[in-house]
Image (tube, rainbow, N blue to C red; front, side):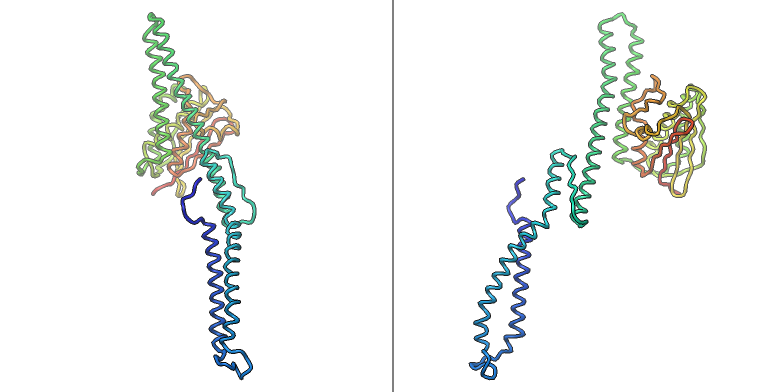
Amino acid sequence: MHRRPGLSVRLKLTLSYAGFLAVAGALLLAVVWGFLLRYVPDTSQGLLGISPNRYLLVRTFAPAAAVAMVFLLVFGLVGGWILAGRMLAPLTQITAAARMAGNNSLSHRIRMEGRQDEFRELADAFDTMLEQLESHVAEQQRFAANASHELRTPLAISQTLLDVARRDPTRDRDELLERLQAVNTRAIGLTEALLLLSRSDRGNFIRESVDLSLVAEEAAETLLPLAEQRGITLDVTGGATWTSGSAELLLRMVTNLVQNAIVHNLPDGGTVTVHTEAQGDASMVRVENTGHPLPPELVPTLTEPFQRGTERVRTAEHAGAGLGLALVRSIVRAHDGTLDLLPRPGGGLVVTVRLPGVP
């Protein structure tokens, strides 16, 4: 990279070191002149007729002082250049790492050695930033690839159905339209989920006071037909629990949790419990369901986009795209809350959301 015309930082530091050294030498000479030479008599015989006078001392002292000043200046320039290079060496490593990151090479780390000084702290902070940036970019790349794959699937199915209809005009059109409508509905739902996920990630929403108990009741009322269809008992407990945020996003959060709890449950006779509670300065929503046992190592991956538990129950009408808990996590994060997932010993999952409470 070409630097604009001008003095480099190393040269500026070198000139500063040399300048300070020259000023210090000049002050020393001024002190010698002011407190020593001015007390020497300026007579032809000197002091008591035996010591040299001021004129002789000045003629003897001035050349030596000039040589010392030149030496100090040269010494300051050379020494300052070396010291500045040593002091700025860590910045060279950080600059190289920044240039590599600018060229999409985020795997490089500085890992500066030495004592824990300001440059070491800066390098460690830069390494941490690179690590987080690399993880974020990798996550976004996986998200884009998975989203493209998920969106391509319904489009490919639609294309196949249309090709079949074109080749076979006698095919039942009602069945074709029904299947096309189902595929199109799934594609629209996936697109809306992606847009909502992007909106919650940006935090672009208006905050207002929301009662989570009312949100839980509304979500349960909406999903009650689905629960009855599957033979799932759906209960909502708890009192008024207030928080600050987007009512629409919080309703989508609770709805996703309850829907997941219903869909990924026992084939018959399962239960889903939604509980809201104010805990000090926090507002809590807990969704607990029965179901098949979940491996502990599988639980942390359930909040990643397009991740589906292989041991979870899936049906054709509620296959989903793996965005339910990912959207919940994004909404919770946008509301400065926490999301905890804990497998139940007897099977199923306990999901606990804690949000900042308001009076």
